[in-house]
Image (spheres, rainbow, N blue to C red):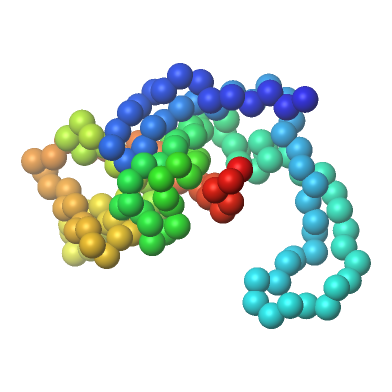
Length: 157
C-alpha cells in the first residue's frame, strides 16, 4: 500500500495552493522502456517492462520539494492549468528562463524568469497577460524552481 498525502497548506495565493508532500514508502509503477510514438504510429513490437520509483524521479531533494495545486490561467500556454499539480524544488539555483515560484510584494506567483538588458521580468504563459517588471521598489525573491507538472487529461477521474 502506498501512503502519500498532502499535508496542511503552507501558502495560499491566487495562482496556487502549496502543500508539503509526505511519502512514507516507495511509490512504484510499471515503466515500459520502449518509447511510445506521439507522431505517426510505429509497428507493434516487443516491449520491456521494469519498475520505477516515482518518488526518486519527482522528489530528488525531498526536504526542499513542495507540491502545489495550480489555480488560474496565467500559465496555460505552458500547459499548466487549474488543479494541475506542480512540483517545486527550493534547493535549485534559479536560472534565466526557468519557471519558478516567485514572491513579489508579499504575493506569490508562478512565472518564467526573464532577464533582459539589465531588467528582470516575470513572464506569464498567456498572450492576454502582461509581463511583470521587477524593480528595486519591489520586495522580490525566487522561492523555488519548477521541476515537474502533472496534468490530468481525463476529467472523469
